[in-house]
Length: 209
Image (cartoon, rainbow, N blue to C red):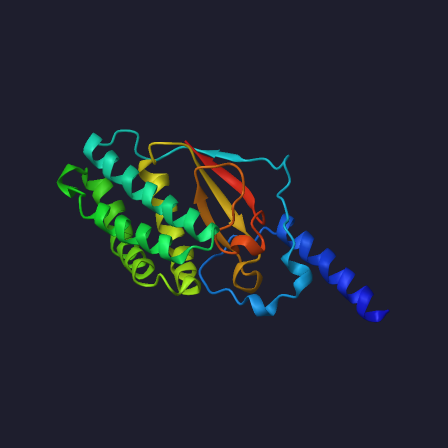
């Protein structure tokens, strides 16, 4: 009887954490063995949660720069969707394509302020893309780099836009409940950190237009 009560209490606490956690920190690894089977149930974010609108910093960007950034973000979304589908091989393809797209950037077309912003992001973003590209058989490692990559892409999109509406999502359960963020082209939650085990776990925090 004690075991049944403990299981019910644990499941209730986990459900609450997935829907209500305000932990915004990211970066890390995910040890699924640390969660009980009761924690693997789909959890949907509250439909009435307020989504904060966010405007981009640079409203005047050279069209060629905007094109490269859009392509970079498109490949990020490719990685995100592959991880949500537990497909490490496809995520690796997205990583390779993202690294290739970034090589097209002509930084001479950036203003001094824009270049300073881009330079802060560029090296780390390339590194994460390359790691994801080289680890198609190690999805856990890909997700570690994706959590860090997501911070960089968030900064990129906040600065330059993405050529589309982008949603900033948050997963409270990744990395033993430390949490992590990601970006999505969809308002619907499709969790890239937990995949099929908890596909709907997360909340939409912001919309970037």
